[in-house]
Image (cartoon, rainbow, N blue to C red; front, side):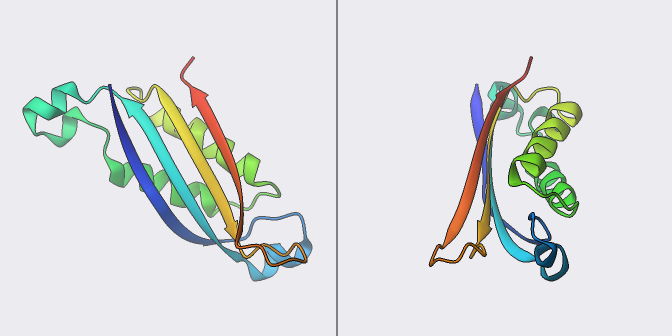
Length: 119
């Protein structure tokens, strides 16, 4: 087994329960970690034998572009799509952070983290 991590994928998205959040948007950061078998690609040096991190980034960006009220919801969509499109992924750890959230305090970010295993 092996791990592929994409750290601090930055997006500008429109998630949140407040009407204003859907209009003005906010900065987000996504951290993604997947588990997969990397033994074949270690030997072959061929992209077809691994999980293409370009595709992982594309999935994150596509799902972050779809408005959700909750970070949990967009996170679940990202995980579901990765499992559907990439059969070799066995485990996903995903963190979705809203930077400078409008919560009336000096908070750098609020983050949800989800961990899922393929059924």
